[in-house]
Amino acid sequence: MAALPQPISHTVAAIDAAYVKGARTGDSMGVPMSGVAEECARKLWYAYRWCAPPEAPTAKRERIFETGNVYERRILDMLRMIGCDVREIDEATGSQLRVELAGGHIRGKVDGRVLGLPEAPTTEHVVEAKSMNEKVFKALVKAGSVREAKPDHFAQLQLYLHGTGLRRGLYAAACKNDDELYFERVEYDPAFCLALVARIERIVASPQPPERLFDDPTSKAAFSCRFCPSLAICHEGEFPRTTCRSCMHATPLDGPRWLCEYHDKFLSYADQQAGCGDHRFVPGCVPGEQIDCDPETATVTYRMNDGSTWVDGDQGRAFEPC
Image (tube, rainbow, N blue to C red; front, side, top):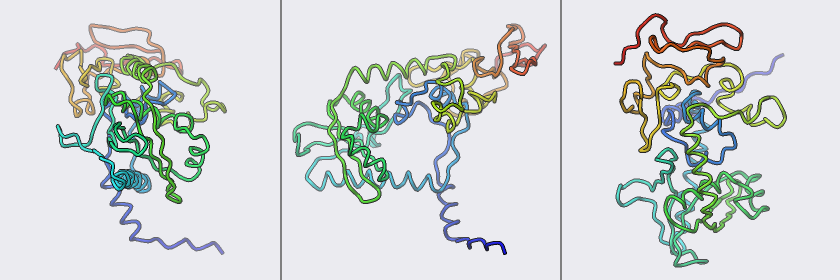
């Protein structure tokens, strides 16, 4: 006899549905500060150019994010509890403290700024608060260095220091299993930050996707490729989404702004999402080799990986700007 299925809790199902309904979805305007340490420049470029669909929200993921926010608030309250002066809001805007670099294309929200730490009472610090499971937390404690154990967190904190002009950071981590705490003071590393910002600037400015990190995504070394949202585009011959950011006519500028060079107009977020009928793929995103182009009809011809020929654009039609 087959095992009977476990009963479904309609209350849990309703809660899950509410989390998904309330989730913030959509593409990021720039490169998130939390992603700047990503090893694969091509992955960052694909994400920045909105090539793959944004990750669909799940109730579990939304609750995990919410738990992270709860721990962030708790850590800041702990600092207040010992007499520290903690600031989370930008007085000029009334919103959470923000940092934008690389012409506004690197973006992030600062957890807080703190003055009055027992180890350095007169030195203001940028606070980066994190929560993590026991395995990750123990590895952090064992290493005794966020730079060694969590290089992505280290890079994020460094760029907050770079953007705020402060020279000391406080990395504050909490273990979600037993509420153990790990706090580490971090010194600003200007050479590290300048190199990191320059790398992101190169990725943002690149009109074509950077080289693949691995040619064979099934190799042992390319384990991370298997979880990349752009795997099918990078390695399996799938086209990217049709948005302004995957179009050869769109150029990112400081601001941050996006310019459609063919129609000579700046593009709003909604414009970029919608695209237009004059979209032409960035050639490096097409699963084939460009073999021809026709300025009169604004078409681009490719020899595809399967040997067929494909023309991007309407053949025989004049290209008329809107």
